[in-house]
Length: 210
Image 1 (tube, one colour):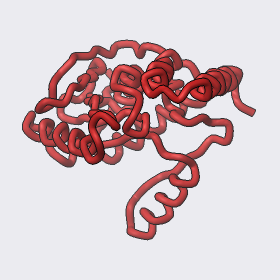
Image 2: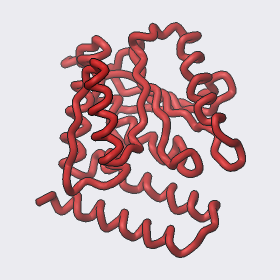
Image 3: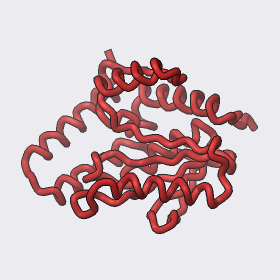
């Protein structure tokens, strides 16, 4: 059985789902989606700076004592039609702090105003901007988190078959957009700590203990 905080997280999500069902107006869906930032506490000792990555709006996330040479490139959730970098900057702050790296949270263009593959083009543009800033490709981690359980299991199966080194964890009581509960939900904090350690091991980074 999960913690009381995890149950509250589930209740918040159920209410949001109910609100989505009251309208088919995309602008209202986007407004409802932005409420998700309320699930995340502000991480301590993390600062932010608005930047433009070759035309792509972004937020540079800088935890204190983080490595300036390692960075996480993050795409927000929303299926390419809702959500934003502002919705997820705090959650990414928690993850970047756990990894001991900086992060770049991009605000890619949304459909239907900008049709696919505009979203992927913006990710590539931001990645190339990071290269232009001097980041070594081996020290850039790209990630998002909007993947469902069945999709994750299938992806893991195919990736392992291709020789990819990966770890897959799941929590039965977890919700979609799981890591947005960082700073509030014990199970999610534990998962973020584990993800940070895994990332450090993959990008060659030792967390400062000073």
